[in-house]
Length: 91
Image (cartoon, rainbow, N blue to C red; front, top):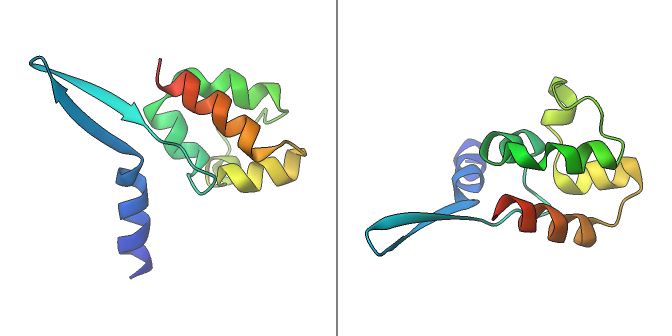
């Protein structure tokens, strides 16, 4: 069941909206989203993570953390970080 829920969460952060014959991708990153998943779908967010002191983005442990966990480790306001990351991911 955990595998199914994790799979649903990974794909749940993306949805496509068909409009005028094109696909518009919108991303909704939450506190439970895994950092590695964010970097996979929105690599342009890497400088944001670097700016909060998360310098080892390629390390397995950092890529496996949730946004909430990363914020706790780095002393960052989770809601403010989510606003910045979602804005950048949806440009």
